[in-house]
Image (cartoon, rainbow, N blue to C red; front, top):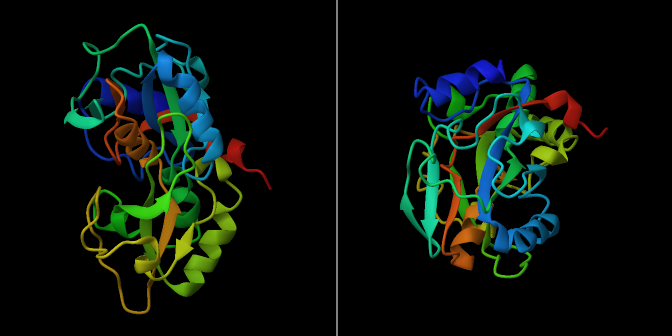
Length: 256
């Protein structure tokens, strides 16, 4: 259950990527922004819904965000954090208790890990889960729709699949826009400006079998690209692949 999983994370008994865990519940990417920039960031999410589908937004200084789960502490319940100063990644702490401020606003953004159980039920292989690595993620050449200081480029996650599995994955994930929905691209990575699939910008590479094609979904690491481009004095995000486990059932996010 998500509550017990968060307790393991809080006590540092779990510190790795969260793919494949608590599969019936939504996982969330995090962007934690000073309130002075929160309105602009909210507009950024609205303008980029594929990459930044919002699951919840906290009040300034609110680290529990009840809508996301009971007995939840944003400061401790994520397996790893990225801390940015002036747009530069400078720390990767295991918790952010000492860094917390009363002006910080939590944005919880849907994650593609959330639909992976649905793919697994259809016996669609998930190579990063099978190989025990973090899903590969890549910066693309696609510009985000800017809002205030936030812009940057779209980040995508990649899962290799057969053509038949890719068609079924599109059918399944299109029902869940709150966790990135259908893929943004199938096939040639060069179209997205990706030169080498074995050199992801985040996560680890996975093997691609003969007759498989790469399938790309918009990724919740995209806000970190926006944070870097905005050069905020201070901001916090999740470490890629290390998500917040929520109490939100994936079934409640279906739109069809």
